[in-house]
Length: 417
Image 1 (cartoon, rainbow, N blue to C red):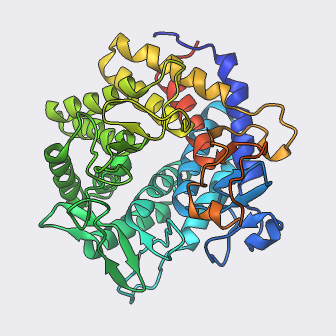
Image 2 (cartoon, rainbow, N blue to C red):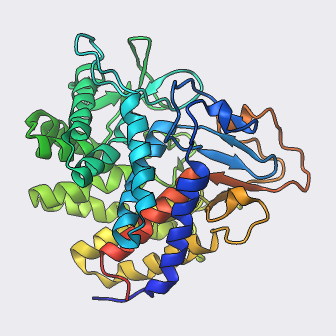
């Protein structure tokens, strides 16, 4: 065992972060309007209970519900993992509320051509998003394993089958991104293809193996073959959004979503090519990490960055990736970036704020005084940057979600004494 952290240095921050997710960010009312006048809603779910409010601007004390399905799914993963360490029953109650929000928002009509579809909206245009569906499914797998209730796992398999039927392009080894009103909506996503090769969370491999669905496993490996072909730069995929091939901008969680599944593929197949690809993606993060442990959104192809724009969720995802690489390789060079990454995330936690909405939460980024707000849900607040002394703190639930997941991974891999 290699001790990188002291247990007592991580337990309280993890508990505070979980409290923020369950007590502050999670929606308790059926109608989002009942959460108060300070919540801007992009979507029209009939029952919001269990979902997370995705963004918060302290300057205006305003919340929004950006990407509630997949953000909530990742929060469920964080809460279930944290429960194994903290043994706080409240976390199970919160995880159950989150996973049931996802289960309520799917097509359960077996006569429908869209049976199994989960209504995972990503932005404000009313499109269902394939990656947003996939990134919610670890919650269903994990809660099924925790509870012993196979209905959650069955829902995950059902929507994977729907994705294959409606969104998979066999000839291109990629998934169409968008779906609206019963129609597939091809989107180039700034590339020359109709969609993207998505391997997020190795969901098709995991569901395929657990459910003995060989077709899902086959598609997973076809996606990886496409990703190996398209890898550029080393360990990343600038061709596909949310990266931008025109400017060389790379999103801080891209190598996590697209690179970490190669480690799962290696563990499944023992094919060294997959381990080597995973290592390149993990090393991309080492090169992108700043001297204080942060990672900037965006990072460019030459690893230069802007002055503003750290993304704490990216640092946390990198830590998760490095912890798993450490577990597989026992290579000491992963330990220093793990330590720097967690230390950075800890510094981003609000422990004694004047604004009670912030307590325990993780600052995702600091915006520039004249910066346009980056997401449509924030624009819906009706506020504009004004070069004032208003707070520049920008909270996203993902910062806190992946912070908790990262600390849990540190515990899981034996880096705590």
